Length: 624
Image 1: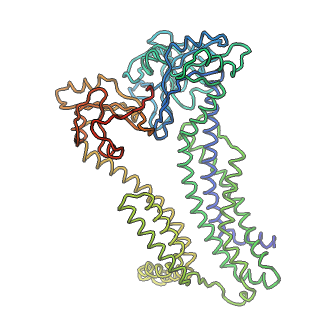
Image 2 (image 1 turned 120 degrees about the vertical axis):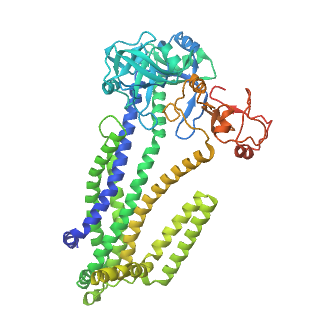
Image 3 (image 1 turned 180 degrees about the horizontal axis):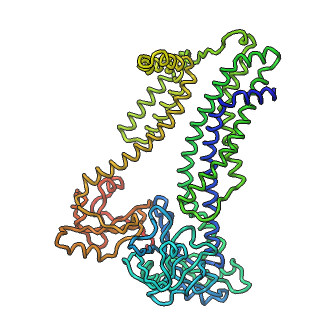
C-alpha cells in the first residue's frame, strides 16, 4: 500500500499542485511572522544588553501611571540631589544621570529626519563621560562639552550627509535650534540602536531641551571592584532611604527593559499572525477540496483495491500518506518562502541584523502545515475507505451531499440567526453581537452550502448558458453536479473576499468617521502640530504668536498628559475657552472659564462616574 500511495501521488501530481501551493503559502506567512518575531526579540535583547552592559545598578522613581494603549508605563523623574547621594556610597565606583526624550534632526533640505509616529524613534540623550555606563562609543571627533554642541549616531550622519563642524538644526519640545556637530558615535558595532536616530547633548542642555532642569530620568551606577550587584543595590537603598525611589540591579533592569519593549511591539506579531491564520484557514478549504476531488475521481481505483483484499484502514492510510508527503514538502517550501517574507518585513520595519532562524519556529511552522494538511484530508480519506468493492463495477462518481434535508434546514436556520445577530448588533452598536452573528452565518453556510450550491448554480449560470451556448450549459451543470466541491470552493473564496472587504470597510468607515467628526464639530480653519502624532508638543509661544496675527480670530492651544482617575488611564487635555467654540463643545452645566484646581468633564463621562458640578475628583499624575 505504500507503493500504491506513492504511485497515486505521482499520478495525480497536477491535481495536488493546488494543495502544495495552499500549504506553502499558509506556512510562508506563519514561518515569516515567527522568524520576524525571533529577529525582533533578538534585536531587542542585544539592544538592552549593550545599553546596560557596564551598568550594575539603576536608581529610578517608583512613581508610575498607566500610559494607555500600547504606551506602557509613564514613570516619574528623580531629583538631581539623589545622584550626589548615590556617589557617596562606598560600594559605588561611578554614577551618572540619564536624560532622554524626543529630538529630531532636520536635514540640509529642511526636512525632519525619520518618522517617530510610525517608525523608529528619534531620540535625544545626554552624553555620559563614564565609558562603562555609556552605551555609545565615539568613532570620530569628540564628545559634546558646551551647550551648543552635539554628537550624532553614524547612521543619521550618513543619511543626512552632515560632517564634523556643520551646523545641525534639531527639533525638540522647545522648537528648532542649531548646534555644532562635534562627534559621530556608534552603538557597539552598529551605526545606530535598532534603527533609531540619536542626538547627544551635554547633561545640562539635555535637561533644558528634552527633560526637566534639575531632574533625571534615572541614575546608572557602576560597582566598585569586588562588589556584587546584590550588595550594591542593598547599599544604595540603605543610603538613600527614599520610599519614592527604587533601585534595580543591572541584570534585572536589562530583563525588564527587554520584556517591556517586546510587550509593546507584540501587536505587530498579532497583526501579521492574523493574516497567517486567514491564509491557513483558506488553504484548508483548498486542501480539502483537492483531496475530495482526487478521491471522487479514484472511486473505482479504491474499489478495485478493496476487491483484491485491501482493508478500509489500508485505503485510508494510503490517502493520508499522500497528505503527509504533500504536507511535508509544502511546509518545507513554505518556510523557505517565509524567510523571504520575514526579510521583506524586516526591511520595511528597519530592523538591524540578520534573520534569527530558530528551530522552534521551523518546527512550529512545519507542524502547522502538516497538521492542517492531515486534518483537511481526514474526511476525504475516511470517505475513500468506505468505498465498497462493488463500486468498481459501476459509476460511483455521484455526489449526494446536497440532499440531506436535515443538514440543509439546520444550515438555513443558523444563517437566519446569524443575519439577525448582525442586524441587531449593528443597530445597537454591539460589536460582540455582530461578531457572533457573522460566525453563525458562516457556520450556516458551511452546513447549507452543498444544498444551496445546485439552485444557486442554476440561477447564476442561466445567463451564462444563454450567452455561451453549450459551453455555458456544461459549466452550469458541472457546478451543480458536485455541490459539495462547488460549496467548498466558494467558501474558500468567500473567506478571502470577506477579509478584503472587512479591511476596506474598516478603512472607509474610519475615514468617514473622521470626516464627519471634523465637519460636525470642528469649526476651525487650521490645525498646527509638531508632526509627531502627539508625541511631543510645540513651544508655548507658538500659540501666542499665531494669535497675534491680524488674520486670526481665535486660537485654542491644547496640551495633553496622561493621568489616572479611579485607577483608569485617562488622557487629560489642557486648553482655553476658545476650544469650546472651535470644537463645537457646549457647556451643559456649570461654566467653561477655569481656574487652577478646576476641570470640565464630558457629560457622558460625568454621568457614568455619577459626578456633578462642585464635586471633587482625584487625579493621579505621575508626580503626585
